[in-house]
Image (cartoon, rainbow, N blue to C red; front, side, top):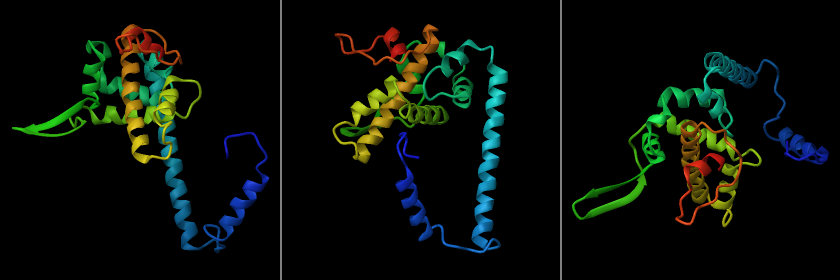
Length: 214
């Protein structure tokens, strides 16, 4: 429950005592609260079954796809995320540069202007929202795993203030954009993802070949 192999007897005891005085109040088995709880659990189990069915279908449908296999090796990308990326983008090689793919994913920056007025620069509202959401979810999974460039980048981004909600939101956006760049690079080069930390070249950019390793 804590994520480390340490004695949890005291922690579990505290959780149990807290539950007894809050959510764990004694109720009869036929109480409305118990019926509602069972209803929610049933819905969750149904969603899990649907997810498992979609994952099995994705594996069966794309088991011979080289692009699917490459995507599955990227941290955070499971069968459903890989299926969504391929379904929403088609052939990723049609994007000559990763900036084109970022724009397609709604991850490029845009500024509203009217005459002499210049608004705040924000993420563009144009592009594929479903693909952007998929990359966002994949990034959140990746930063919870060990030994990959996504987690390293996230930790460096929030290092100066780990509890700053705005900074964490910006860090997650940066991770989403990084996920899009890596997806594009892996498919375009046909090279497997390797969990190495990205390193900038003298010009300040990360070349495509190194982006695959990042």
